[in-house]
Image (cartoon, rainbow, N blue to C red; front, side):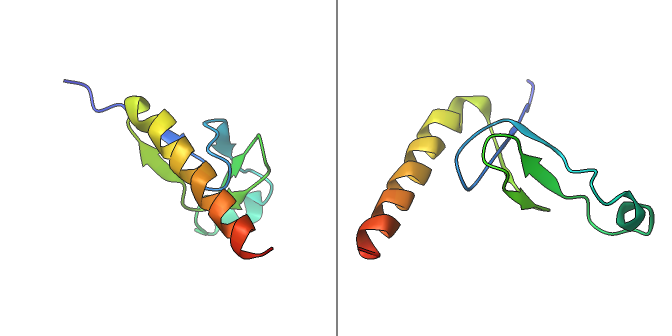
Length: 74
């Protein structure tokens, strides 16, 4: 049984997440490896790691949380 996981952006729900190599000097000295969402530009050393079949459900939860936050800020 395979435990394949995908990285999911907690900001927009995209799976287009790549390693951010913009600071190679820091990486060489042991700094955490940061990832970057190619869809929205969000950067972090921690992204959601989910099963492929959970992606749509979690995307919907992210969209709902963003909408709730926007509603509260109006």
